[in-house]
Amino acid sequence: MQGTPAVIIAIFVFAVVLVFMGVRRVAQGFNYTVERFGRYTKTLDPGLHVIVPVFDQIGAKMNMMETVLDVPTQEVITRDNAMVSVDGVVFFQVLSAARAAYEVNNLTHAIVNLTMTNIRTVMGSMDLDELLSKRDDINQRLLNIVDDATSPWGVKVTRIEIKDIAPPRDLVDAMARQMKAEREKRAVILEAQGERESEILRAEGEKQAAILEAEGRKEAAYRDAEARERLAEAEARATQMVSKAIEDGNVQAINYFVAQKYVDAVREMATAQNEKIIFMPIEATSLIGALGGIGELAKATFAQKSATD
Image (cartoon, rainbow, N blue to C red; front, side):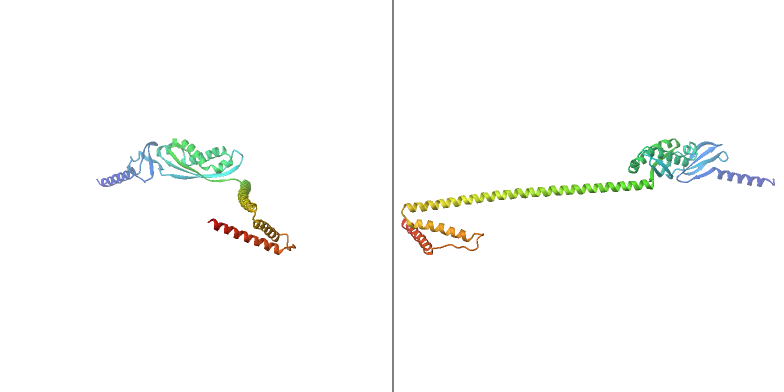
């Protein structure tokens, strides 16, 4: 009887230990696999769970949150035999803890190596120019390939991003020279086009100016001809009137006509630009007599008009 309390205490302690061994707490964002005698039986979600002590044990503790992996830098030879250094990142999430734990050994290592292999495959089938200008296409192709390959492992690859594509230094220098030459070529072409358009606009302006000038000369000639026509009509009427006066025997009309022509001739000689000094005989009495005749003619005309009224 003396050993009974010790046995009871031992049994109680053993029971407490079994309870502690059977109770498992799973943190948020993780799943635990349960193995019985080494065989997978179930998966524990986040929370408090009870398993059978001794018979059951925790197998793998899988992180169910999205995880990022760095893809190490590697050398890739493109289709046009250019060697570039490439690195990247992979984002994935475990959807099935059991498959991720038991379908592949060392899940992260497998994903990294699978990604590196497909980077060489995809980029090796492209030219260097495509490699540098179509990074989004490369990311999408890699994502489709790697996601399909990791699907049996209970993993979803959400994104693959190429971080850096580094061509060799001499290739970068050659590309810079080519880019500079292209820009200088475009600048020369643009400058030539600008000069061409400027010449065209200048020629169009000169053409319009010539047209306007010709139209102005045409209008001026038309006006001059119209003025000469009216002047000729006026002179014709004046000559007709003088002729009629002569027919009527009016001597003063003859004096008026001769005096007018005489005065016009003197005015033209006086206003000529190529003459500075004029030597000419002028009979003042004849000119005065002609002017007197003009006056007498005017008086006779006005007197006849008054008598008519």
